[in-house]
Image (cartoon, rainbow over all chains, first blue to last red; front, side, top):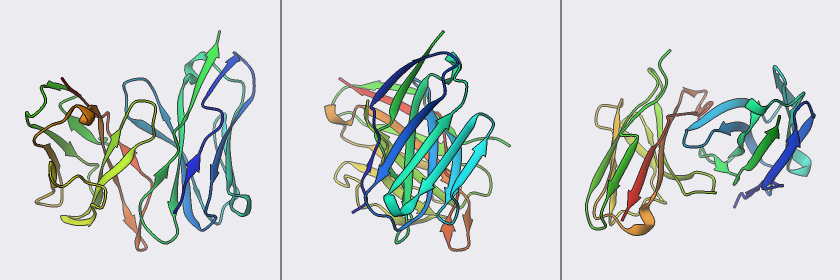
Length: 112
Length: 116
């Protein structure tokens, strides 16, 4: 059974710092992995989708990497801003089924 | 392009009462999901529809929860009777269906339920 963890649970950084958020999954047989952002009281906003054949995806200041063999994905945020403060969740779609398995999220605070 | 629409945004009810949530997915998305998100946790899948058929409802508490997607477009999730532990955010999501698999997941704003 696929399990997804995200460490740390919370992270606080000063504005302008580059940072890395981690996502680990137990079964390397995945179809794709998606990173989301969730603001308080809001739904999830899709940030990046990485297919199993890809190693990384980039969008603006965000870069997501995927290492299936080690069961890890990282989300790199460059030059962080207070507006980046939110909870970031990763979700893995297993190869053998169709439903995403979500991690618990990392709550990020970027201090001005 | 319009996103996933959900209503109501907030609902407060007493235990043993009933509640219904509505979702309209992105136009053309064949796959629709209902998730339950408890504070501090990631979303948990309740039910997945492919057009108007149920693909996965293994985690839906069928004694009190029901969902339908009659015409393969919008969907309704009902809880009857509600329990205190049903207090959560109910998220609807949709995705396109390509090459035999659902694609990228898009979420609505969610419906926050408080059961007193």
